Amino acid sequence: MKNSKLIFLLGMSLLSFKGFSQTKTMKKELGLTKNQNDLSHKLSKYMNAQKDVNGFSGTVLIVKKDRVLLRQAYGLADYEWNIKNTVDTKFQLASVTKQFTAAAILQLVERGKLSLDDKLSTFLPDYPHAENVTIHMLLSHSSGLSLGFKDLALSTISADSAYNEIKKIPYEFSPGTKSEYSNIGYYLLGKIIEKVSGEKYAVFLKKNIFEKVGMKNTGISNNDSIILKKAKVYHHTENGLAHNPYINWEVNIGHDGVYSDEAVCLSIRFGESTKLMLSFAHLPSTVSKIKALRQNIIQEHTWNFFD
Image (cartoon, helix red, strand yellow):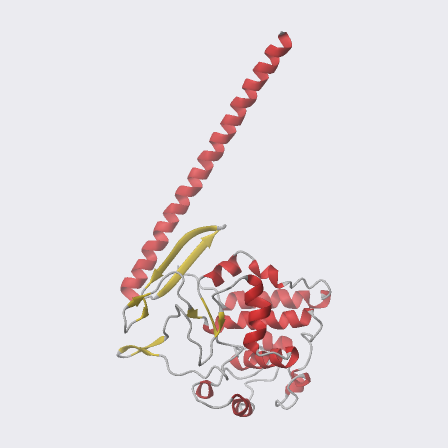
């Protein structure tokens, strides 16, 4: 009888302790929820002000510790028809394209198709001074190549003719001596992807990145396809918004061209890129370079709303 009484008392004690622990956990979770709700309210207020004062148009997804703090669409996808943006509207990602080009190159490195120390001349021997430029220099904007080729990208020139014209653009500095942003470098990386893989840039990225990560609403722009739920592109002028000019997507590859919806942010935020199978297990000599390159890419495409 004494034993059963002891067991009963012990059971009551454990229940009380468990109940106290659960209450403490619930209070902590409620506190976190309140803080997150307060932050969500501040973020929403801030973005509404951006829409009202500065005419912000787009979708915003803000996540902290796997919790969505703000997911909202603002402005219009089509100003002529007054069609509003939604959270699944697709947008041109512009230079965010570069991180996908970099991932594709690193996949080819891991498969033994090329090395970060390979010379540009290995793949494009007719490019001026290609023997002095490495793949790593192209990735890290330290190749000395000029910023870009806007006039060619806005023309109807063929891809081969554009390449011949780009070869004439002089270097800004000696390769490897410093770092300056270069669209031409990533354009050349796009061409290297095509040469090494034997596939079109758009096909390679679709098969090896977008489909593996599950980015169903992501693709590479072209001048023919009709893309559902894709926002029209505008630019600011002295007289207000105007349609963006024609862009030749046969030429404008590697550094630009990816379109997507907000899911691209979730894919990056939640580590979906691990599905790209970039283990680097057999590349110990390039790990430090890859870490530095990853940090460089993150810094290039990170903005702080509250700066």
